[in-house]
Image (tube, rainbow, N blue to C red; front, side):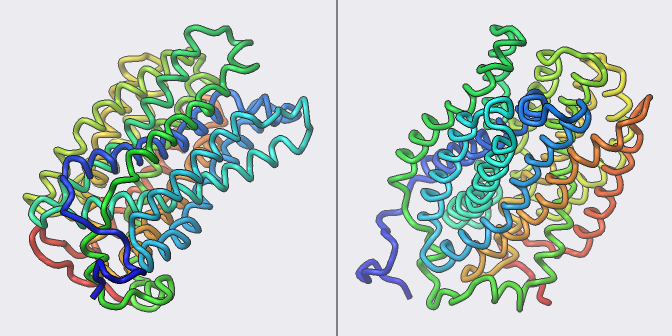
Length: 437
């Protein structure tokens, strides 16, 4: 058993206030996802012509989305590295290191010269910095969610653990709000010349604020209660929980696919193919994200009351039924209809992801929880987040309504629905039923 007298034991004091802990976790994930989303918005709107000017407009957008996807490929690596730190040395160090890494990489993206100045070195620098961003974010989710979930009482774990899940919505709104403000106040030439860099520089101030907020957090009681931390957490996860990791990755893939189809691909499609103004597209997406963030705690509360798995199955089934209507509404180019399509899709998304922060940790024993939950969560990002903007952009090349995008999203949703059906329930006040290889 770890004790506070041991020099190797993380700092522990009086039990922290749950609201303060939840606020710190939410703020951290909001900042880190701001860093991640601001790149996605820039990739959809300006990075193609600035960093891949020798490509056609479609190929430039695809290339920009490819650098966007690199961040998702890096996230499982981040979950392995930071999962090892979290399972061996505590959840708290993960929160500090990952936030610092992501913040510095994001500021650096805002300083990268364009292709016109440095040639092929420019997109290469983007690629490297996006990779670093992904590694940092791969560690952030596990640390923030576990610190909140492991401090919370079992009967209300879903509610308290959902606060870090609100962070992505806030980060997205902040990233796109700044972009929207710049779009309104700057000319197209000014935005393309230097305005797009400002949201990246803001990340430095946000990271400093987040580090100050997290400095006073106490270590997780579940980690402190582990008698013998895993020597190589990844090896234990691969040996004893490989089936669970694959099932959770497949189950959560649809959430990433839907979220990034709405918040990233649709921006590029609406502006470039439908001729809708950048401002209108941003407002439609942001309004839907506001509703998503507001209802995340509601979904989590229902998960505490009725179980995690039923909510996941319900949300996934709704996505299966809604993808063709959503694409049809988007293709109209009418703001209210596009908003309706986005709104229903993101509400179905949050029905699942509102309970995930409690669901995944409950499936793993504490000694490998940081690695197992984070690896499964971030592998889903590769399956759903990295591929979706690329596949959707390619599938929407022809004239007319992009039904290929709807078919792709529906297929991912069916896969995820099957994976959720194979996962066990974790009772709000009980123990998880283990799934082993």
